[in-house]
Image (cartoon, helix red, strand yellow):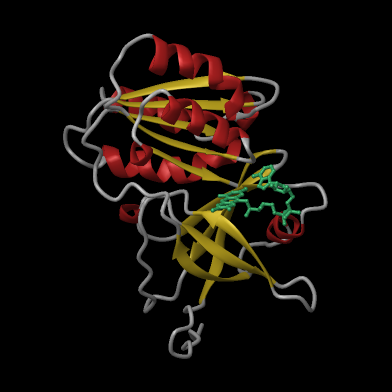
Length: 241
Ligand SMILES: Cc1cc2nc3c(=O)[nH]c(=O)nc-3n(C[C@H](O)[C@H](O)[C@H](O)COP(=O)(O)OP(=O)(O)OC[C@H]3O[C@@H](n4cnc5c(N)ncnc54)[C@H](O)[C@@H]3O)c2cc1C
C-alpha cells in the first residue's frame, strides 16, 4: 500500500493492515497492525497512535496506546474495549483481518525511554494496561532492572488482561512482582488505600517512581496522593484517558 507523503510540517499518515484480531473477553480485543515493509515507524514504550475513524463526513480520531515494546517489532498491537455508543471503539470492533487502519503518530510523553534506575511501581486498570505492558516488556529486556511492581486492577478475572504473560514474566525475572486485584469498579481509585498504606505510610522512602494509567479523574487522585506525600513530580508519571 502506498504511503501518503505529507506536506511540510504535517504529520505523516501510516496505513496499517489488520493482520490478526484476538479476543480477550466479551468487550475487549487486540488488533495487530502490519505496516508496509518500507515504513519506518519508531516509537517509545508507552506512546500512542491517533487512529482515523472514518465513520461519517467528520474527520475523527481516537488515541490508542501501543501495547508492545518497540523491540517486539511488527505487527503493532493496540488493545481496546468496546464502549456502548462509542464511535471509535465500535468502528475498530467492526474491522476484520485485511482491513486498513490509518493513523498518525507516535505521540505522548508517558514513556519509559531508558530502563528504570529506581524501584518502579506501575499502576493500571483494565485496558489501560496497554502502555504499561509496553514499558514492562521494555524494562525486562534490559539486564538487572530494579524492583518493578505491577499493581493491576480489573472488574473481574476476564478483564485482567495478559495475566498469563505477567505471571510468566515473574517466573523468568525475579525483579518483577505482579499483583493483580479484582474490584467491582475496575478503577485505580480502588487501590488508593493500598497505595497510601504501602508507599506513603509504611516507609519514608520517596525514591520510587510511579507510572499510572486509567480512565478519568481517578488517575489524578492517585497522582495527587503520591505527589502530596513527597514524591517528586517527575517521579509520578501518569496518563489519563
Ligand atoms: C493517550 C490515550 C491513549 C489511549 N489508549 C487507549 C487504548 O490503548 N485502549 C483503549 O481502549 N482506549 C484508549 N484510549 C481511549 C480511546 O482514545 C477512546 O477514548 C475510547 O476507545 C473510547 O472512544 P469511543 O469513540 O468508542 O467512545 P467515546 O464516545 O469517545 O467515549 C466515551 C467515554 O468513554 C471514556 N473512555 C475512554 N476510554 C475508555 C476505556 N478504555 N474504557 C472505558 N471508558 C473509556 C471516555 O472518557 C468518554 O467519557 C486512549 C486515550 C488516550 C487519551
